[in-house]
Image 1 (tube, rainbow, N blue to C red):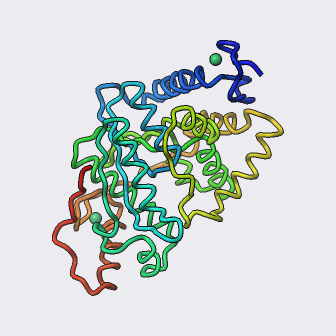
Image 2 (spheres, rainbow, N blue to C red):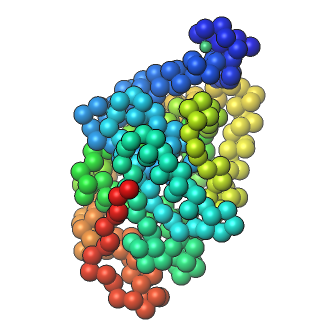
Image 3 (cartoon, rainbow, N blue to C red):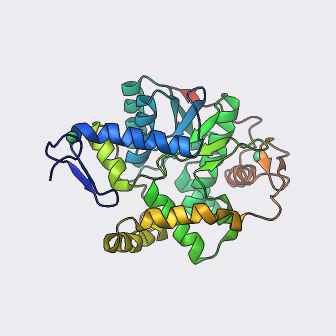
Length: 315
Ligand SMILES: [Zn+2]
Ligand SMILES: [Zn+2]
C-alpha cells in the first residue's frame, strides 16, 4: 500500500479515515489533526502554561512530545504510585518520564504518593479495602489539581485516547450513569478552585498514538499498571473493537453523537463546591475525600497528620 501524501511505502493504514501514510508523513498528519482538535474544543492557546499528566505509557508521553512539537509550553507531572512488583512498574515508568523530560528539555514535576499520603498505593489498598484504581484515581485528580494551582499552570492535559473515552462512554450508557455522562467531555472549564482539564488525544485511537510513539522513537513502558489488568474497561474495549472492525468509524460516531446530545444529560442544578476544612481544596462536603483518605491511612499507621503536605520535588 502507498502513502496518500507522497506515494512512498505506507507504514500504517487507518480504515476509519481511509488513509494510508508512510513514516515521514505520519507525524505531520498526527500533529495537524491534534491541533485541529485543540482548536475545535477551544482547549488552550500558546499563551497558556500546560501541565501534562504523564504515566510513562505511550499515550501520555506521545501527548507531551506532540504538544512540545507544536510549540506549546508544556511541562510534565508524574505521580509515583510506589507500585513495584515483579516488573518494577513505578521505577521504570518514572524513568521513562525522566528520559522524556531530558529529550524535550522540559521540566518534570514528581510527587510521591508514599510521601504525600504516608503509604504507597498497594498499602493504601490494603488499609482502606478500596479498589486500588479508585484510590489511585482520587489521589491523581487531587494532586494534579492542587499542584497546578500552586505552581501557576493554566490547564491540565491528560492522555486519554478515543478507545478510553468510548469505553467509558459505553460503560456510562450501559449503567445510565447520568452524573458521569454530565462530566464526560474533552474540555472541562475551570470552576471554583478546579483547574481546566483537557484531553487533546480524544480523537486518536490507541493504535494511532502507538504509531506516533514508534515513529518518534519515544521510550515508553509497555507494561500496564498491574492493578489495571482485568479491569472491566478492557472487556468493553474488546467488544467495541469488534463493532469497529465490522463498521470502521463506529467509535468516532458513537462519541461525536454523544457530544452533540450531551446537554440532555447536564445536571439540573450543578453541585455547589465549598473549601475543604482541612486543605482548602474544593469539595461537596466538609472534609474532602482526599483528606479523609490521608486521615484514614495515618490513623492506621499510628502517625499524626502532618501539618502540611510535602512539596513536590523537581527534576
Ligand atoms: Zn508519505
Ligand atoms: Zn481536603
